[in-house]
Length: 165
Image: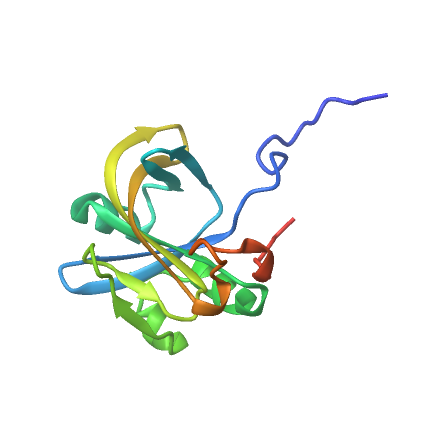
């Protein structure tokens, strides 16, 4: 017998746990994002949900770009830290000693420790209630070389992706 679920907030699973990195006015930041998905294959696009009260919200909105960084299980502590602290208070990336490199297409940092990074340009945004979904066209994807398959795509079976379910 089925029962009605009372807590809808955390009942839609699974979902990816990613880090979104951004840059605005020379300032870099990253935040943990639990609302994310592919939303188009042609052209490739992703949607990331950001709560407007988050420090990164305006950085992303004003710059028009962001980077989706996939997170491995070995990065659980960094993910939790980036999700619980605010850039309003201090430079979280510097505090963690996380290495970044500049994107090749968008003006936003790639998180080097993440195995896959997708540079995105915002093409639309949708207010959904608690979050604003930024729809980003994937401009370029970077992946650790050992993760590439024979066709040049990412073999996701080789990545121990972080899961909070």
